[in-house]
Length: 351
Image (cartoon, rainbow, N blue to C red; front, top):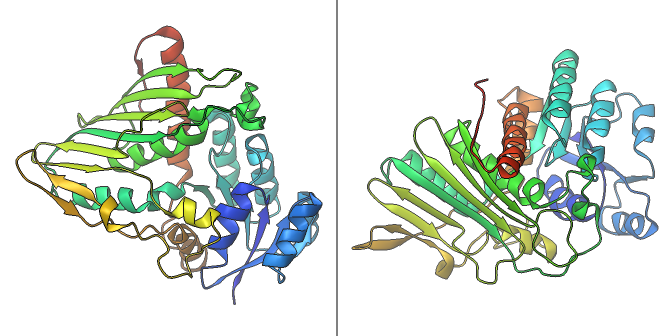
């Protein structure tokens, strides 16, 4: 029997990054979508006629046993309250990034998860970007030797400031580019090299009319000596390489973005031919200045996150992502804010 999924939120996150993936995984069924806006309710009924449309999240908890998984794709300040409500109702939960606006809130959620014996899955879908999967494969295979520096960028040229909670300076909204794009970049570095020992940050607000950070650089020092240099910006007039991974034997350099986000926005899903496939001309280069050759980019597969969630819930397999990694990511964000304010590197305490 398929696991019944209730999706809370049908904005960009719910409609683009969750619903198409949930419905592409055999064994999962989108049973309900929570959204209040009439136009979004109509969109749900048109695209997913088998799903119930619910106007308030609290209506989900009135039917014990009706759902096997809740997905929280609401604005950031609602992540923890909605996830706690799901756990209290006895339902495992997927929470979009960032899981919480603070490490304290994330730890409180972890404590409830442990008490209830129910998993919380952070939605760190960028672990299934094709270029990141390729970099991970090359590093694991030793093709680069010892990784000395891991450079990673999410850069954009978007000077117009759109009115949104993402531009909020209220700490409860977890607004700004460090929480938004930075959550992905930090998570990828943690997944590859583990918890950093030291964090240095430069955090700026550059666009006219902006109040939340929109241009950030992070330098993470990992215990094995690898340094992760992470850039996220809305003000990059020229875009740097997506990854530049420098090792003792070779490097891996790739530009451009994984195609899945653009494909999902265009209405494609993992069921469509060509989904997640990077164009050959965008494949990265592996080698040295004397000899470098294209290395085919692995297919991107955000749907594999939900396939992993299904295996965990149905078969007891290890979770595809852990709340512990999300908490470490929030510790890095908080250390980054302190570093930028004080103009110095900040040591992370051992766990």
